[in-house]
Amino acid sequence: MTKRILSALIGAPLLLYMTWLGGLYLALLVTVLALLGLREFLDIGRKADFVSQSRLIVIFCALWLGIFLFGYYTWLLPLGLIWFVLIFGRYALNYPDISYTQASYGFLAFVYPVALFTYLYFLRELPHGLVWCFFVFTVVWATDTGAFFVGTAFGRRKLAPRVSPKKSVEGAVGGLLSAMLLGLVFWLITKEGNLPAVLILSMVTSMVSQIGDLFESALKRSAGVKDSGTIIPGHGGILDRFDSFLFALPMVYFALILGLVGF
Image 1 (cartoon, rainbow, N blue to C red):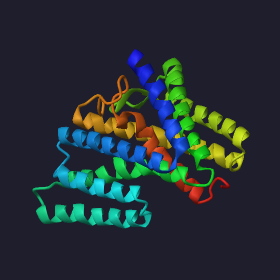
Image 2 (cartoon, rainbow, N blue to C red):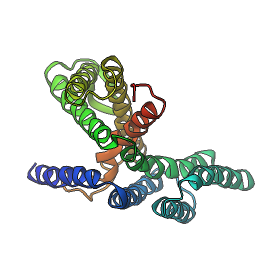
Image 3 (cartoon, one colour):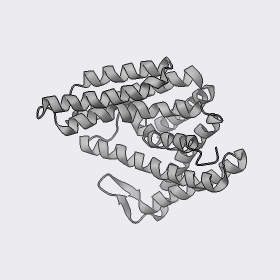
């Protein structure tokens, strides 16, 4: 418990500070987190026998992140499409030596722990992006806190017993309500967007973050591991700490880009 508290006291302020700095500092942090998350994702895949030719995956993801760091953002989507063709073309040419599961996991290795992490940077770069980054952080944390306390006090019906036996439907609802309350406080303080849209975005972000948590839990179950890694004392790995954020960040980013909250 002491390690867990110390890690949180160090890690959370560091994340908030680097997000506040933005620019190259945040881009470097995102790159490091993405590479660490990729390593954990590939480790999980090896234990579940989902990974084939991890060296190719690492080389491509490192190349993609390098281009991201140098600011050639228009190349990122085309490179992602090239990766799609490359990974599934390799599957087609080498079937049945490479399974569809291995090919899909290889493609997901680029999307999940690498591409999704960069949305923290892209969200920060939007007008008022710092405020919306903090919105994501606090909504996810409010969801986790609300789900824990409501689930502990009132949890009866299992949400996904085969994936995460301790999570309950009541806890999930508690997380949603906590996120919407946080959304109300956020709007009262910042006046960003319009209130109904912010409340809806808070609810959707909370739902998506909980799905992200369950997704990572399912991955670990498939590999028979408790944590994605050990890099954060008391907390596990990078993916254990950022699983919810990886789903929530692009959701908020595109909601803002599409003007769904009066942005």
